[in-house]
Image (tube, rainbow, N blue to C red; front, side):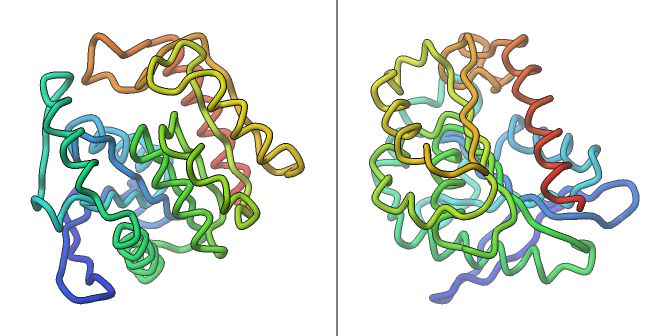
Length: 231
């Protein structure tokens, strides 16, 4: 497990956490961070994906604001929200494309490439899928900004698995319904509902973590990724 140096399209270099499978090679998965940065939870997701046989790469999305910004659990909520408010999503899209190209260029990445992300990262996963038509699969977890980006839903071509908590205080049912309506005509898109709140997969945020829902969603996610990236 190490950090890669990724070259941005407009100049500059940023870090991305890399986790390799035991075999040393496999299909690739981009992992997009929550508002807390690349912390223990996101590194843990990468490591779990590596355990499933994937080459996992998590870019430092906040590098233009504060390189290697990292906060732990709910205590970093205010700092993280402040970073999101300053994030330029146009530049983030460019950095995502650069990271995707970097992952595809790694000798360890021998197959298709998918993307997965949580909270802010769920929104970035959707952004990745709608701006990179060559992406092979996407798994956005409770992306709180997706409902504001549905104008680009027509560009969502890859198989996609959305996860939402039905008791999410940050993403009301009406916003989830908007997403479902926008993708209703896409047979390769699935929306999963879970009996949980926001950030239910984040074991590093105890007040949000829901072990049962996290396990349920992870099983669905790994089955989905295996079906899309290993054939």
